[in-house]
Amino acid sequence: MKRPIIIHPDPRLKKVCTPVDDLSDDLRTLADDMLETMYDAPGIGLAAPQVGILQRLIVLDCVKEEGAAPRPLVMFNPEVVASSDETNTYEEGCLSIPDQYGDVTRPKVVDVAWMDADGKLQSETFDGLWATCVQHEIDHLNGKLFIDYLKPLRRQIITRKMVKLKREQARA
Ligand SMILES: [Zn+2]
Image (cartoon, rainbow, N blue to C red):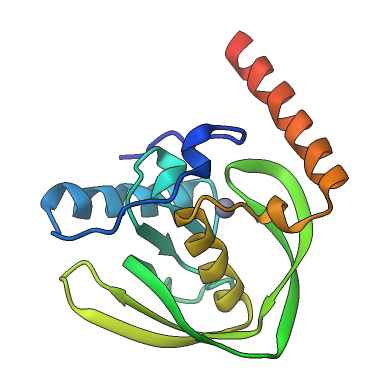
């Protein structure tokens, strides 16, 4: 089931989310719903606070090649355990900040550990777009948005546009 995506600014997007101790069927359903919501948007990543759930859960799939098999990843309690000195700059966007983009510089390669939907511990090294995406999503769990990396004026302009968008949506 698709879930509505919260649009910035919203206090729920600024909160530090709580770790998942016990995997439940509700949380597995939430992960499935988040993947469906992400693919439908379409996007390459989604964090639980973006659908109003303040728990440490993200989903992502950065496979972009036409016709390539999808690779949905569900990560509970994801954590960057090591990151490269080498950086990468990508023009990032966010499903909670529609149609706004900005260059963000992050470590190019990261080692990430997480718990999968079966409760098993996993770890993997991510590079390129996957590395950027997983860091962007983990930021969400700490109440941080990609616009927080931009210059204050740019951030203000984007936030004002979002306030206006939400006003228009509320009226519609
Ligand atoms: Zn985002």
